[in-house]
Length: 421
Length: 113
Image 1: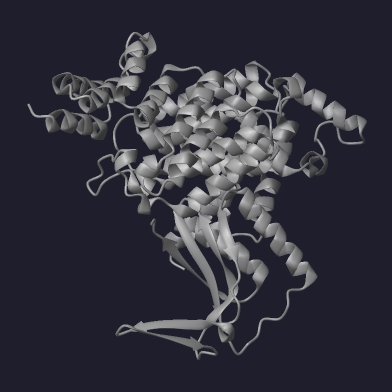
Image 2 (image 1 turned 60 degrees about the vertical axis):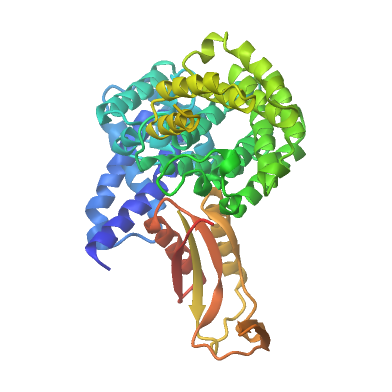
């Protein structure tokens, strides 16, 4: 084995163990900042010892043992034990443990899967800003470095590093417990987790700016996090709804860019290039979500819409009436002008461009859509279909000025030019 | 990135039935791989002696029944994985082999449709 491959193997093992290691330590310390520091100590030890000694047979246990020793040192050395640690020590002492060195076997005997679930809920806690939740989730659950996250989001690395440090401080100051929320808090907390995963996927999928290679990696990471969550919280229909949505959207990745990397609209995609394996996985996840019953949530509804598209081998086979109806339901559970805009597109396909334009014209007054490039893009498309080409051209030109993504800007500019200048 | 992994062996050395202990460890491993979001699909294949070959040449089909003489055949099953890179696929394959025992797995990247 070459040195480079051996080094890659070590780094890979560490990355694979990272989330579980941090989760277990966070359960024990109740502090994800401290948990990450302890995990980092163990990683440093591994990077020192494994190249010479080889990767241990059970690397996760090895890392946990080293982190455990560091934690004991930390607790013994620390002359200024915080109230939390003192309490933890007392609690364990009452159960026959040593007051200063908590009984790790007991603390770690709990199911590590539950700890990973706790870690997800904590990293996505609403006390944190959305960008902080995203960064912390990618760092702690995805095992991405701050450099990788910075690259994916096109921001300087210190910005991400600072965001993560501040997030951990905020969690500590707010004394956010390391736990899966109680039943009365579960729905909003789960919504926050799902939103974070969805935003990570969308950042990769929609690429709001630039065209860095990290983008597909963000999609893949979000799908992976969704699949992990579906295993950890199998009774939540919206988790499966989100997974279904992501799997089906990911199935289109091979078809949604042309050979020069430009975007290809859904209607123009070569559907033989859709990944059938992912579509099948998505449909299975959707059936699981629907099978769990209850009112269909926003992700399950969006997945149902995506599945309608996936079922059509040719665009003409699309069941637009069903999609219009699903957008109607979606607008009820998640009222949003963007949903209305999508409903308008479906209406134009099901019932003609004039019906859709009537709806879109109402949306032009919507303040939240000012500056949203898809509004003039959709409006331009409808006007073109109605033969109002001069107005259509102006809308496409406007759409081109509103997007910061180079590829999308090009597409809109091309469509404006396609109508003759 | 998707990877297809499969294990080849000598067809003359039959693989014995898995011990209950190995079976248990393998189930735990598969569960771990699913929970990690890595394992997309997995399965085994019937022996090559039961295989059928369909040939098409000059507009004519011929259907041949086994056994076929091959130096190595698929013995340990196959797995379709989705990982961040080849290095992760190698690591999961090592974990599989630790349980499956001596053998040689091949990992090939799967391209999109």
